[in-house]
Image (tube, rainbow, N blue to C red):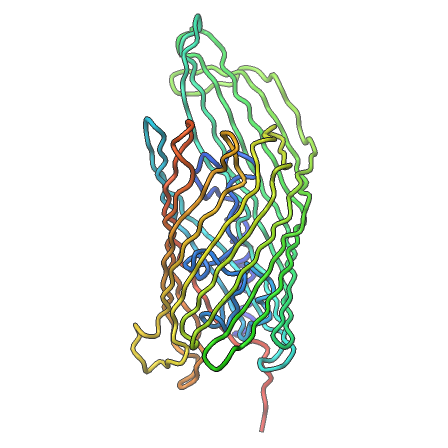
Length: 440
């Protein structure tokens, strides 16, 4: 009965999570373009290690975690694992004349991983499903200009929403070689609003244009991992992932209205444009990722990633073609964790300690050929929970904390520099499901 209840409440939580993910979770002016601010698919553990994870498996870092970055890693699951995470992001935006700050918080991810074969077998198989954000849109920008014979004109731009990724992954392994496939359903809504109004003209109509885009389609990722034990103290691993090219269906509804203001209240006067449910297709380019992992004495893990994606020919219904280019990212992460320690050891010694760094060029090229860069440093800790049984070296789970301190963009060329701090708390819970009981 307890197992049934656990699964029931896990399903209820998943449904709640899906509905909650529709909220806006960013406040970046760079999310205005393309598909918004693309999100990393890693959880708290990977975020603390520079967001690297192409080569990570359960036996090359803290045991019994889910690594959604590479679906081949599901083959290393040994316990049923539930991952739940929440985030808080504080951003400081600055141009050459002024600055502002904002804060966003909410759910970060939810995932369930299940081993489908018994540990210790030459062939292993694991599966997982969950939901993560694929991209986010969130901004609120305003400016003014002065035009001869008209006076001051006020402009404002707002955007919110995003695309969610509901995924189902499988990983298979045989004699150190692992392969995996991830099938995702991308869905979500974005809303873009632009206004102009005339402060110095009496009885003048301003305008408001609202564009709502609904996305939905399938998306696939494949992965490979190879691990070899060099000797009793050293293990080397490699990872490769490829996000396959995809076409995302979109329905766009555009509404144009004339507006006036009574005080601060906006009044709709007339509809000048209404274009409902215009169908279009956005083509996502392939993404290639390469990584390695080096494990020293089952204590120190070193991992590094490189990923690249060509967005040069990407276009959207916002007529932003030419604003996109090749994106790439380098990530480096470290973790110290002593697996051999038991619950009788000092709690400080049984914790996980992680740090890392990343540097990359986003897919945006807003001012000439130079891309918008994104860089940062990461740090995190893993707090182990009690063992499932006295004397058994199997953790019931971890509480994982990670902090990313990053910088995106520049104040040059009339752009915006964004300094951000993203805090993630993740709960990794482990259970033994589908046990075969023996009776005397």
